[in-house]
Image (cartoon, rainbow, N blue to C red; front, side, top):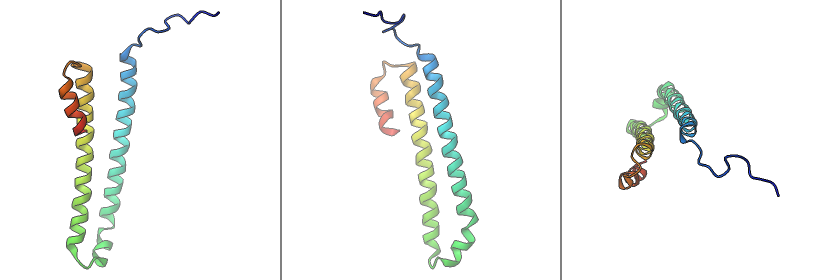
Length: 105
């Protein structure tokens, strides 16, 4: 029978794992901001073309407001997810706060 490797069953150090997670999260946020910026530029670039074909200008205003509200909600969700992770790492005893932040994110 072979022996288990040295260190088998020991806890992993959370600091390197957290650094890796932070890198992935920052890349994901950067890509989302980039995608949102490109979509906004395309929408603004074609605004004059859209205005000619839209019989009711308020429809275009409503579409822009929905786009802006979606971007703001996505940013808020990302912020609350970041705060939840920070609370989980710094103060794990505050479980009710973590649950509330989970619902917000």
